[in-house]
Length: 328
Image (cartoon, rainbow, N blue to C red; front, side):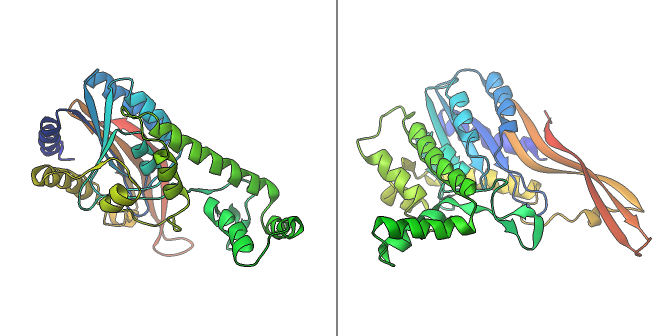
């Protein structure tokens, strides 16, 4: 990876901001994507220890989302080293990424910056079975459940207790009651986490603003795939969004483009293209945590093999290892 070029960009951003810059990229390359997960916490700790205490930390973040509890842990960890925490959003920062942003005093969003709703889909052993894959379970979106109940009340005129019970019974016949209980528990969890993260700001939010932000991000966008632009985030959702000046915008986008190119984010990963002869080992980077002091990568390691029996030209792919590795 072109680390030296990125070091120059990171240093320029840090000098412009008067901060320590930590980059966290969860790759969304087809077939080898990564997500925000608890295993990155120790990696963050390594970089934060090398950086030491400072007046401000800027987290450069690109992610499609992931585990909703990890942002809570990461924000607490980052704030052990600084009184002021900011997230820089060059492009996509969805779901758990947006949740992480809520714990920041300020969100710097470039023109291409995007946030997303924080209404996750939940899966457990009691979710409906996928008819196309008997071993898999169909995710249940939290807001889909509450929208059904709202639809029954607002549009179908379900208002009496008996009618409400009947509407819920119909739902429980389609989705296991314990799966519905899990949905409600996650609904309470995500709202609680969001409010607690917002409460960590240096400057407390005015009364009612926290509730407004959480309501918008959990209930009022109506589609989990909704892409929140910086103006919507600032003007409608009332997040603490800062638009960078032209120079900083250019640096932010150049840094993201460097990661995107090195990680080939726009190109599907096809292990068969790595095949030389009948058997080839491969490694592919699908996540990065990087600072001026070092770099860690999430690496998929595997082997691709060609077999001519029982089917000529058949290619098998096995992932042997996956995880974080210190690069420098």
